[in-house]
Image (cartoon, rainbow, N blue to C red; front, side, top):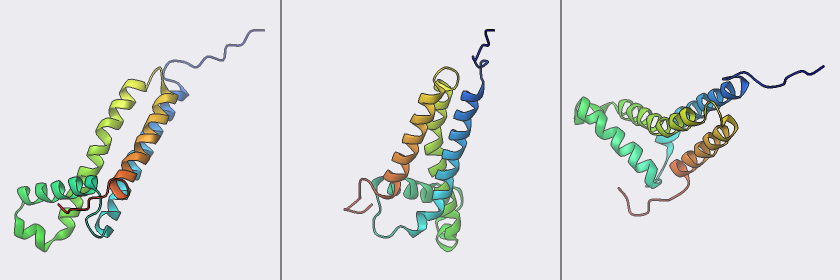
Length: 129
C-alpha cells in the first residue's frame, strides 16, 4: 500500500505563511501604540515614521489642528508604520507563498523582529531630528 504524503498546491504550508504575515503585521500595528511613550530622540527609524506621519497629518488637516489633537498625528504615524512594514512583508509573501513557504515564514519573522528592534532599540538618533 503506497500512500502519498504530498500536500496539494497551496496547502497547509502556504496557509501557515499567510498566518505568519497577518500576525507580524498585527504585531507591528499594535506596537504603534507604544510610539508616544518613546522619550528622547528615539531611533532613526522612529524619527522617520513619526515625523513623516505628523507631516502627513498636518498636510491633510492643518498644523494647528494636529497640534491641538495629537491623537490624529499619532494615528497617522501608526498607519504609516504599519504600511512601511507591510510593503516588504507582502512582497516576501507573494514571492514565497507557493514553493518556499517555510523560508517565507522565517524571513517574515526575522524581518518583524528586525523592524521592531530598529523602531525602538537599534540605531539610536543622538543628534535630534
